[in-house]
Image (cartoon, rainbow, N blue to C red; front, top):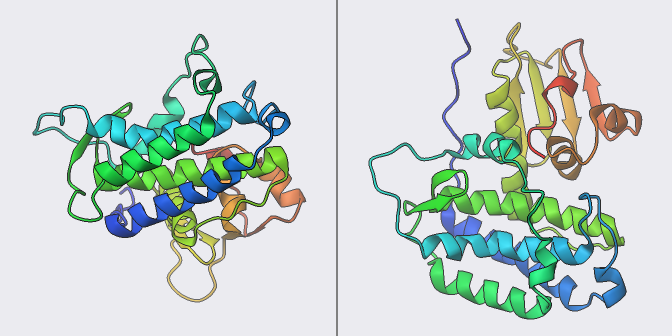
Length: 265
């Protein structure tokens, strides 16, 4: 009999909106200080420069206002859930003919101001969580889509820090939501109770079929920090490298997540 799936984690849309704005604000402040030389620097995202990455971050948040401006998808129809979003994004193929995002936005400071102003005007502080958006991976509740923006912002803030050696801070709530969604995605992909994955202070999940742990210290434990977990889940670092660098501790014969990672890329 397959393991029973747990009830999906709930996120407060008001807190998520605040977290999204806070993290976007951290990136915006950093973008204002970037020099032309920094904007031309390479990133770990293929042929994208920092300019392309910075534009992509803004456009990722701008997708909320863009999708809200479209007609609401007709119902009834099943909406894409939060746990369906990471694999759906991972399965999406980037158009190799698409222009680099930075080319169309020479004034990045103005772009960030426009995106932020539109978000503030279009996304109310409360009461809009059930609105359906026609996103690129299917219709999604606004409240859920806002959680996906914490993933985009946290992951790409790390990309930007890595590219330039910056220390752009992470909003605690945005980092928590990103960490939890990716941890829950792992548990959904490999349901079970034989391995406990700990990402303190934000998430603890059990996964992988086998003997279920009930009390005391679990026989199979994986533990890592939030940013390392995010890098593993999104393919920014490899399982073997994280183990070798002591960024992950894994105890027990089943505590090997290499075959399950990355969750999205």
